[in-house]
Image (cartoon, rainbow, N blue to C red; front, side):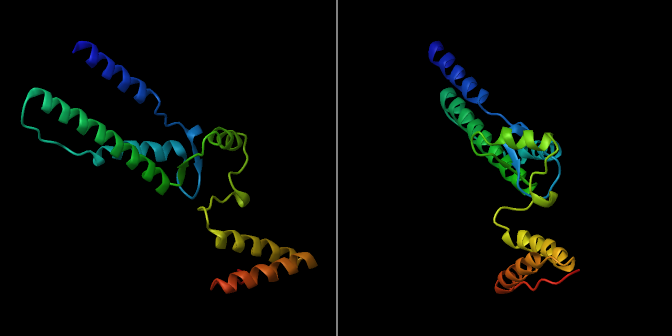
Length: 166
């Protein structure tokens, strides 16, 4: 019995040791605070996802219920932290891409064009920024900028957005 308990404890420790949560594992996907601030806020609040339990029965059953509850709470806390960081503009990076993104930001490179972090799939924001850039070039007399502005304006109008200079 003691050997089984030690094996279970060793397996749990090994699995818990694989969990990381540093900035190299995340990429910025939208507006929000720095990773350190967002992560700290999420860490402070993740305990709210925990569930209690009541177990009546043999000591082995109560212990099993406690272990099961602890595992369920760990999973719920991880999911809460993941969702909390997404709300704050951070997402777990695809395997192998987080380190490169963090290194680029540390070197002073903007994580996205224009220095504005946009949500994925937000093509309208990108098109509006591109339209504004093309409008400035067109105002300066660049014919290519005028053509780009007109193409983008047509796409935006089709999506229900009427671009106009500010």
